[in-house]
Length: 61
Image (cartoon, rainbow, N blue to C red; front, side):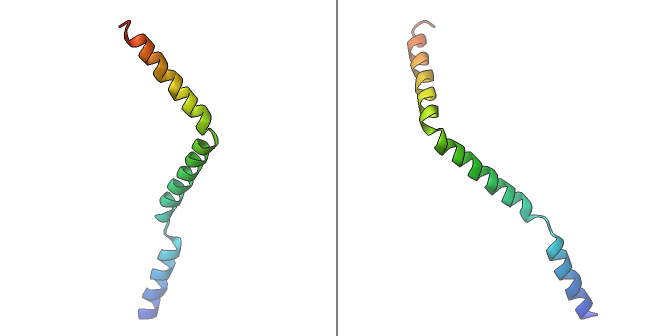
């Protein structure tokens, strides 16, 4: 009886899928970080351009 319970617990652990969400989250973060590193210069220029536009148009409001 005790061996049967241990076998069932091991089977449950192997079939458990709770960790998949964590792995997916880590992969998404890695991809996002990679995109940021690849397009860092372009993103910086875009943000600087947006802030320059905001500063120049702020006096008109």
